[in-house]
Structures are given as structure tokens and as C-alpha cells.
Length: 207
Image (cartoon, rainbow, N blue to C red):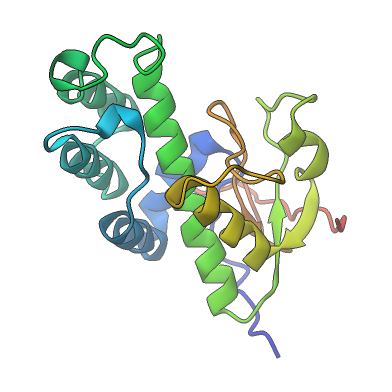
């Protein structure tokens, strides 16, 4: 039988709440830093020289609470500038806003991965994807994932396959695209109140 997940834990309801959630969830902070240290998310921006190590150092400082989100984006733009990249002439790799998309996407990946591992370690099998205020109503993640319960192992495996193994996604996942603001939470857990505001429980819709 699955162990009950404590109801007094805080969970983010969208990407922008991750930093403040980590401030009161050292366990998730530690889990994200562990996953970051042991897994690589291959992207063209970090190819060449020690660029992967530079990216990891910036993200680790962000996850550790030593950098704010905006500062991490600024450091990424400066330390991973195109000058020493083998793709420095590519405006596709270094399209406008590339640093913000990289930091947001990788923060979302490692947060959602850490939450999924927490859920599965507790013995639970289902997770919940809250609606995000900035979500696009027409996106696959909004239409097919948000506001519903899902198989936690399936979403974890989909995330790893897409972002770590770089296999094309055959079904929606979290995060589902570079501008995705969705995150994952346990079923029935209060979400959206990481700093003491009244929490709300997600709806019980099942996918």
C-alpha cells in the first residue's frame, strides 16, 4: 500500500513558483541538485569545451538558492555566449531569448523529475498536473495534461527519454515545450502556496 504523502508540504503550481517552493523544500532542492550532477541534458548551446560544466554550475547555484532566476539567466547569457561555441554562427541555436528558455526549461525538467521521483518513492503511482495561469489553451500539455491525474512512472520515463536520451516525444510531457509553465504535483496535495498562503487541493479529474 502506498504511503500517504504529507499534506503540509508545499508544491509549486507553475514554473514561476519553483524558486520560492525550493526555499521551503530542502528535500526537493537536494534531489534536483543530485539529478543535475548525475544526468546531462544535451543541447547545442552547451556543446564545446567546458560549456556543459558552466551550465551545470549556474543551474546548481540556482537550485541551491545562491542565484535568483533572473541572475541565472544573465549568467547563462554571459558565460555561454556564442563566442566559444562551435555553433556561434547559428541564429537558430542562439535565437533571441535562448538563455531564458534554457534556464526555464532545465529548471522545469529537474523540478518535475524530482517531484516524480518523490511520488514514486512514496509508493504512489499517480501524479497531478495543475493548470498554470500563463498556459496556452491550445497547447497539447494544456489540453491533455493540465487539470488531470496521470501515471507518474510514464511521465517520468517520458521526461527522461525526451530530455536526457533526446528521443522524440510521442506523447505530451512536462515540460512539453520551451515556453511550458506546467509542473507536476502529487495527487491531492495542496499546491500554489509555497510561502504560507492558503493552499488549494487539485481537482480529482483522471486521465
